[in-house]
Each structure stands twice: as structure tokens, then as C-alpha cells.
Length: 461
Ligand SMILES: [Zn+2]
Image 1: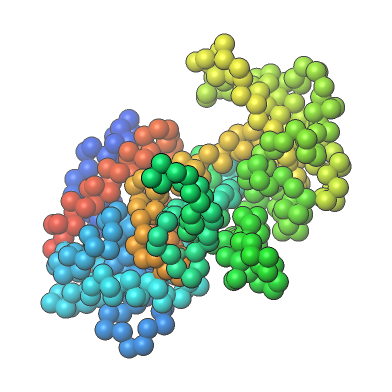
Image 2 (image 1 turned 90 degrees about the vertical axis):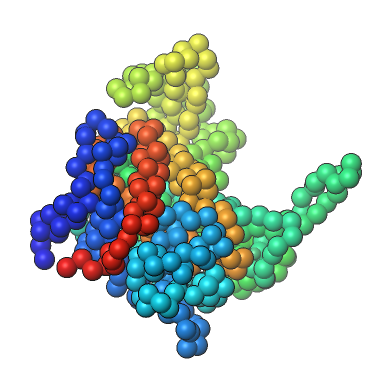
């Protein structure tokens, strides 16, 4: 079936025509959920990808497909916990939605799903989400690139859950001081921390990959012998290497103030990528040298951003070689940004360390825009995942189970984003502040659709 024909199929059924002035989806009728499944199937082969997920249970009564499918839709429809999901596993609309059990049979229990998650093979569930992003790339969704036509991936640490009581054998542990009965006492706190890689773009953001920080006893070789957990950068490097292997078309890494150091920038260089990293410490090279060179000199360029109306003063210094742990030239850009709504307030200063050939072509202003794009990972990513997507809810306290669930939720998040961007035409062009609202409305409509689902949405013939 060709693409034009596919478009007619789900557009007609989902009635996705929208008023270009209204990204609120107010005029959309029912059929959104069915339209989403049809799109995900025809364009991204969702069914086959879910069927390819494996786990290590022996002769399970409920198939791995059902476990993966039920939890994929649990993420998509933002069902708040396994307990909230449990009654749905016996309801016909949800059974039809997942498709894979007889209508009488049901989809098992919350315990079954929990067990399936704990034993899910991570590489197979990671392939589900990676395959969707790779297919989108082949379909030229990312062809335009972002600023300068380039593709940027942001890396950031993320700690979705912590607890003073519940823990597993892969928890990280730290000692924290808390007030208890009028006294300050030191207690152990258990937590799981990850580094997340996100494709950042003006139009949409995609969750690309996630890597846990390892506890001391699981670190490779003798690295954890002193009882220290893995640092964020170690996990980030492992993550970045895999991300570049899977998505060779990414050119720029964007990261926060933890990363403007020789070892990290060297890995970026070895991967033939460019880096734009926030620098915060005036005393660290190469920012220290750049500040000396700039002294009290006025900005080399002062511009007004056409979109935000901010006044931006820019300093740009290339070919610095004062960072002894990095072999190559480094560029440092400083920007002083004045908010047009608060012109008397002190401007906000940004300093960025820039390496690599690709970023050499970018103007200082473009470097700033990409660095500030890192905000997407915190806003579109972490904030939304925590407040709306229930990522921070402990569905199952097990390292493998949590990671498997995040991969299923990533697949749902990415497909929903692609659906919005490709099908709700006004969404991508001018996302602005209403994007989260738009997504929430769409999810609400899908939940309403679920109650009305009278046949399997997988049957798209
Ligand atoms: Zn744990």
C-alpha cells in the first residue's frame, strides 16, 4: 500500500482536519484512538514490533505480546498504576484494544504484567522504540533538521523515583539528613537514576534512549570497589556511544554544566560528533581563558531575536587550546540575554563550550539557541513524563521491570508525538505553550474512544 492511500485511510476515519488557528483539537470527533492505532500500524508496524518483544518466563499463560501491548496502552492512555489498569484487563474494550486474547479470556492480572515486565528482555523492548524512531528517519520526518539543518541530541540525568523504605538489589543508596521527632537524623535513601537522550527540535522531541547509573557492586571491573556508585558521566558516555551507533545521523550533543570536560568532549570527538555544552565555572578551562581574552571588551555583536524580542549580546572565541585533557581546538561563546519584558533586570548570561566541525558553521546566536533547546528535555521530557505520564510512579520496583516499562512508555510517547506532528498539521508548525495541553486533550479523547471501541482497531483492512 502506498503512502497516499494510507493517508486517506486513517484521515477519513479519524477526521483529523483541524482549524489551523486552533491547536486545541476542539472540532475533532470520535475515532482518535482507532486513527492512532491505524497510523502506528501502517506507518510504523506497531503490531509486529510489539510481537517481537520477548521475556524469559517459561510457558506463560499470558503472552509477552499481551504484557507489552497492555502496558504500551497503559502508558499512552496515562492509566495511573497497575492497580488502576487491573479492572480494564477484564473489560472488552481494553481487550479489543490490546488484541491478543479471546474476549472471554481477559488479559491476566496486575501481577502477571508485573512478572512479565521483570523478565522482559531489555534489548527486545528497546528495539521496539528504536525501530519507530529509525523508521521515522527513513520516512524523512527529521530530514529538515533543526538549526543549521542539524540534528541535536540532549543528554541529561534523571531521577524519577526515590524511597526511604522500598528498595531492590539494584537501587543506588545515599545518606540524607532528615528531621525525625524534632531531631536531625541520617537515614539511607534508595533511588534509581538514569541518563536520558532526547532528540531536540523546534517541532517535536523524541525520546531516543535511556541508561541506568549502576550501583557500586554492579560496576564493571574494579571501578566500584570503593563502594561508589557510578557517576552520571560514565553512564552518559555508554549511552551516547549506543545512541550514535543506532542513530548515525545525529550530529550535535547538547549537555549541561556537568560535561564541559576533556574526557567527555574526547568521546564526542571520537564519535565524530560536535558538542555544545553549558559551562558554569569561571575557574575551569577553557572558559577561564576566554574570559581573560574578552576582559571588559564590549560584545562583538548585539542582536534582537526576531521571535522572542530578546536583546542578545554575543562574544565568540575560537581555537582555544587551554583544556589540557582535550586534544583539539575549542570554541567558547558567551551570550548576555535581556528579557524584553523586564529590561531593567540584570541580563541572564550563558556560556557555552563548543567542539566539532559541524558546529563551526553555526553563528554564535545559533549556538545559544541550541544550548537553550536543552530545556526541552526538562520540560517536554522529564516534567511531562512525571506530571502527566506517570513515569515517576513505581509500577514495579525492579530495575529490569522499570527499564522495560520506560521503553514501552518511550514508544508510546514517540508515536503520539509523531501522530500529532504528522496528522494534526498545525501542531508542529507553531508549538509554543499549548503543546502539553494539546497532547492532554488528545489523550482524553482517546480515553473516551476506548469506552466506545466495538471492534479491534488492529483490523485496518
Ligand atoms: Zn531499586
